[in-house]
Picture 1 (cartoon, rainbow, N blue to C red):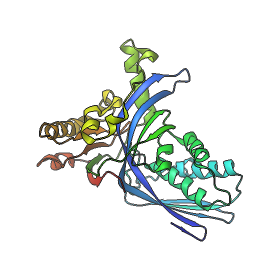
Picture 2 (cartoon, rainbow, N blue to C red):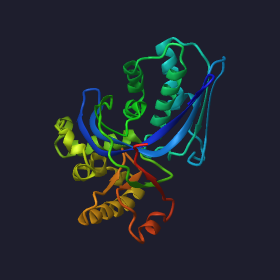
Picture 3 (tube, one colour):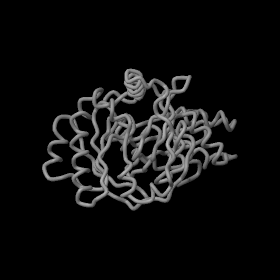
Picture 4 (cartoon, one colour):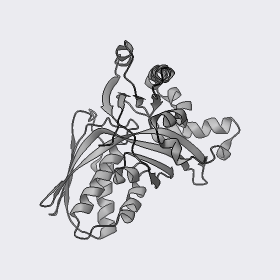
Length: 304
């Protein structure tokens, strides 16, 4: 939505339905293969372009008590700077983010905000970029940003998340998110994966790419049969909440599948958010999940 130098964008959260960590490159970076699913849950990002000042304000129910750190380190701010550098558009901006997506939990909230800023500035720019150029900028900001720029409900990503295949959307289903006040540092999660593979004698040779047929992503039944996240091998050892909650959701999903419902109980990204997709929480489970500092949020998958 655009009004006289102002653009409002919805920044949708995501979960990973499949996440495989490939071999570590010489640079130390791990490639990935992943199936992205967008959620109806979203932040609201308002961008105004013009003037000389550059500001960023974040507020909302999921803001951490200590804030989000230095403004210039925020991914939305970095996205705006990168866009201006790429286009040569020397304008000020005002960015306002209403945070509804839990922060630092593997749901792509920061990446979604950055993607929304790129889309907004491109809509407001005197000389907008082609989508390919916009995706190139997105790829420099993080593995989740390109797919969230596209806004595709379902997409397959590989490499560094910058190589994408948009897939036909699946029917909307319920999703229960279990989030925590503390997340898992992505670098620590990758480091734990690398250490585990080295200890097992695999080293950088582990994690070859796999060829998937597009038909494997055509129904929730086929997706549920493939659903997996390589981070689940290490993240429960890094986060006590995940260690407690993930088995509950996995058991609930397995029970649902036993009754013919294609449900998935999994960790999203490197965590710490865990989710149950395709079925409701069994009786008594909600109380167990909301004990302590755990919060369960009901949402739905897109299409939207």
